[in-house]
Length: 632
Image (cartoon, rainbow, N blue to C red; front, side):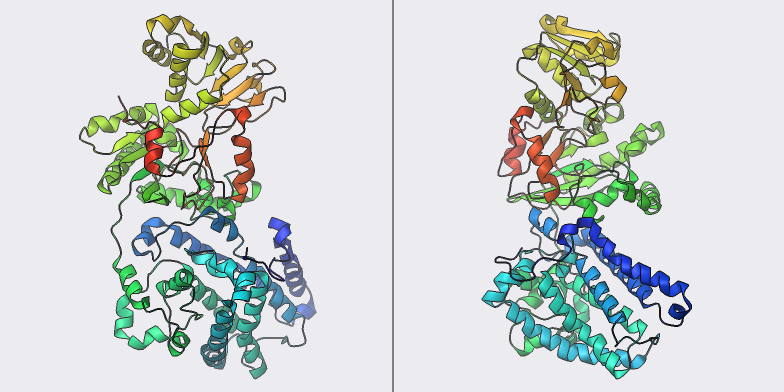
C-alpha cells in the first residue's frame, strides 16, 4: 500500500478474492450469444477475442514467472541479488488484476458506438502508425507522467506502492494502485484509438500490441539481464531505443533516474539517465560465481505440489499446499513434467534465502514421495542425493540438511551411507532430528509420566522414547513387536537402569488409558478411537492428522518462526525451506505472508508449549539448534 493512500487506490473487486473472476462471465455470455445467434454471427465475436487475448496474457505472465524463478537459469545474471521480503509477495499476489480491468474496458468498447461491426484481420498501415505513435506521444507523455508521479504528493499517495518493491520480479510492473492503472490504460489505449479513427485498426494489431506491451513490461522488471552486450556494441544507437532489465532496475534502486517506459531516448534528452546504466549492464552480463553457506535438500511431494513453488502459480504459492478441486485440473501438465524430471532431471535449486550476510538455498532432487516406496528407485535416489551433497560441498556449503524422505533410514541410514562412502567430506550432513525431537518434547506436559508412542521405526520416535526413559516418564508404551529391530535398537540405546520403563505392545488398544499419544504416522479416524477422552496427539508426522475427535486435542506439527530479517521466501509451500525440520510438515512460519498469519498465531500459542525462534543469523541458528554430524 502507498505511504498515504489516495483516491481510487483500492481495486473495486479487492474484497471479492477469487470471486473476481466471475466478472468475466458477461464476456463469456456475450461470446456464447454471438456464436449462437444469426445476428451475432454476422459480426465479429469480439467478446471471444477479448477472452482469448486475456488467456494469452495470463499464459505469458505465468511463463515469465516460471522462467525467472528458476534459480539455475537466472542466478548467474541477476541484476539485484538481495532477497525479497515477505510482504512483497503478498502485495504482488494479484498481479493479473490489470488483465481483468483491460478486458472489461474492451467490453465497454464493444458496446460503444465506436466499435466496428467487423474488424480487419490485418492492416500493415496500423503497424506503422502504432510504431510512430508509441515512439512519439506515448513514450513522451509517459516519461513526463512518470516524473510527475515521483512528485512528493503523487508519490506518497500512489506511486510509492510500486516502489516498495526494491528488488523486482517479472510481475512487479503490473502492480500499481487502481487509479494509476486507469491512467495507464487511457494512455496506452490511445494507440488503438488512433488506429480506430484512422481506419487502420485490426484484430492482429490489438493482439500484437497488447502482448508486446506486456512482454516489454516483463523485461524491465524481471531482474534477469539476458540481453547480450554485443548487441549494443554492434548497434550503438540501439541503447536509445531499447531498455534492458538492468536499466529499469536502477529506477527501483535509485528512484530518480531512468524514467522511460521502454525507450530510453527521453531519459538521454532530458538528462535523467543513471550514469552507471552501461556499467551495470556489463557487470550483470559477465555473471558471478555462486557460493552458498547452507543447503536444505528436499523433493516434491506429489505431482501437483510443484505448482505451489516459487516457479509455480503465485496465488497457489501464497498458500500452504492443499488439494483443492480446481488444482486437479492441472494434472495434464503435472504428469508430463513429472516424467521429464524422472527421465532427465538432476538436483536443482528451488529457492535462495538470506539472513544478514549468510546465504542458504533450498535444493530438490527430481523425485516424488511415491518414488521412495519403490525398491527399484533406491539406487537412483541415493545417487541423486550423493550428487547434491558433493555439489553443495563444491559450492562451499558448511551444512546440508536432508529433508523429508531424503533421510529415510531404510534408504541411506539417515545419511550415514554417504559418510561411509566419502569419509573425507568437509560438509556436515544433518537431518534436523534433534531439533524435531526437542520441539515435540517441549510440547509434552512436564507431568506426563505415561506416554503411548506410535512411530518407533522413525529416528525421531526413538530419540523421543530414549529421552523420556532417561529423564521424565515412568512408562513409555511403544507400538512395536518386542522382537522387532526398531524396538531392540531402542532398548539397547537406553541405559540398563531405565529399560524397565519400555513396554512393547502390538495393538493400539493398549493406549486406551494413556492421555499423551506421540505419533509419527497419521492415524486414521478409526485408529484414533483407541485414545481415551481428553487425550492429546503430539505429532511429528509428514502431514497433519485429520482431527476427528472433538473430545481430544491435537498439537500442531513442529514449526519455528522466521526472523524478520529473513529474505527470499517466495512460496508458502512448507516443504521447501532450508530450516524445515525432520520431515515435510515440520514447517516454517512466515510472519509476513497473509496466508500464514492465522496459522502462525495458532501454532505458537503457549498451550502448545513451544516458543518461536528468534535469531539474527543462520550461524547462530545452526549453533543453538545443535546441528551434529550424522553418525552411523
